[in-house]
Image 1 (cartoon, rainbow, N blue to C red):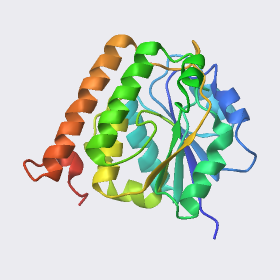
Image 2: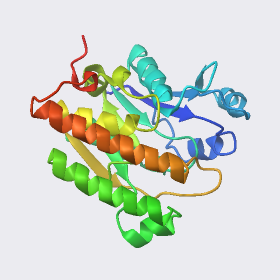
Image 3: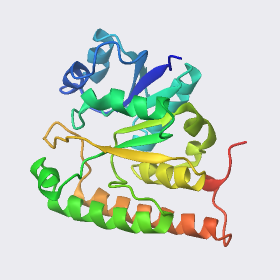
Image 4: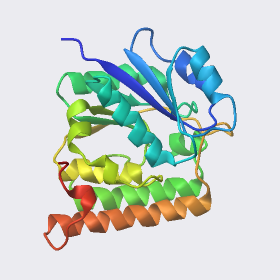
Length: 247
């Protein structure tokens, strides 16, 4: 049975990279591509419409997490069976999207992540700053220990979800900022979804979006806070809205 695959692209000032990202996608892979523009100041919206994408525009900048909420709401509304999130900034290799789909479609995983850290030299060679690499490795190790997972990376933005995942996880309770991604994976573990990852090439360049050092520190602190909330929820010592079932 054919699964309806919808690609979602949370976009902010991706006018210079959007066409290249789409150009790497295999022909006829997705049934639909939805781009949600978070009030870009460049020509992202005009290019997306010219390329035939379904475009939704936020009237103001709401944040990375809020952008994803709109992406997933719209994908579910349009009947997606599998949702693949690809950033339109050309950082991740969109050629591999069919592999993500296949692992979900064949029932191997409920969630598939693209891992940038197959080797240290490859990761740093892609341009990832050393402080981000070290923080990524430290947080991933701690998160794996706390959750019982063995993921090679918790902090990638290249992801695919089954419809069931998006119907169960209360992602509307999550932050509108970058920590949305960490919260989502802790929720996935809490609700016992099967998570897998595959190695992907990655590109760090001036056109690709990347949070600065200060925002990275904030993201790390928020991730640790979510980890503590996960532990408290699992042990029954406290309850948090992000781990409560959707009504």
